[in-house]
Length: 292
Image 1 (tube, rainbow, N blue to C red):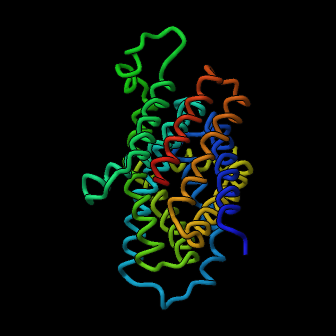
Image 2 (image 1 turned 45 degrees about the vertical axis):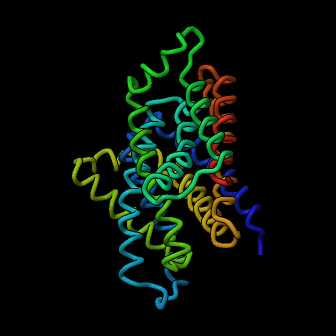
Image 3 (image 1 turned 135 degrees about the horizontal axis):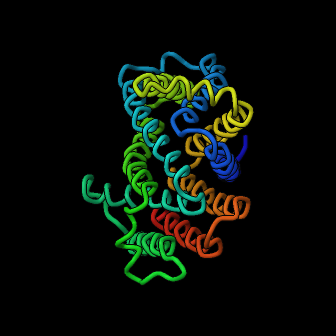
């Protein structure tokens, strides 16, 4: 059996690869049509998981919680794709590393959990990295605070962060508390994602764009689907087999740094070195928050 930390490293590499490929496709495809096409390919690839589900481990409760989590996760993923489409990759992805800090604050204020001194240091690093990410070469020191919400892409990332805060907690609950098996999680989640995104397309009247995504980019999206299923399965396997969910999550956060380095270089993005440093600071902060 593969050790959990190897699975986490695989998940990080696959996740970074998926992010770079997503940015490439989103240069010419709309976010909703891309996300729906990807969800349908993911569902097809995930079909074999249904043959290995132990029905005795299923209940209306855990499937209902998974459905609720999938609705939130689908919107979060769509917001991330909108953020990646409207922002440079090395700008959008590091902001997602704020999730552990938000989860810790949520647990502190709502659940009454304590926050260690090192976790507070981690939150400070998250804020510092976010500040560096917004600070341009010829910008006043106070400008990042004023201009954060001016870009449309920032608003999408903020919405995604709020939803990811909730879904990350539900992921832990489903795998550790509700006893949902990995095969059931993978199978039903991707079934729900496929149905949810199809409903979004129907509501938005976007079937023409969906056909266009299939026609223009299906090979790239199919590749992204295989990579996506790979990193999701590897990460969930790491969470299931590790002694600490936090350790597995901290390893996966390195994906943001990899994607920032690789994507920023491939797409010749602005302020490349500064964003790499900001991403590194934020990943370090996320690891402190999660582990401590």
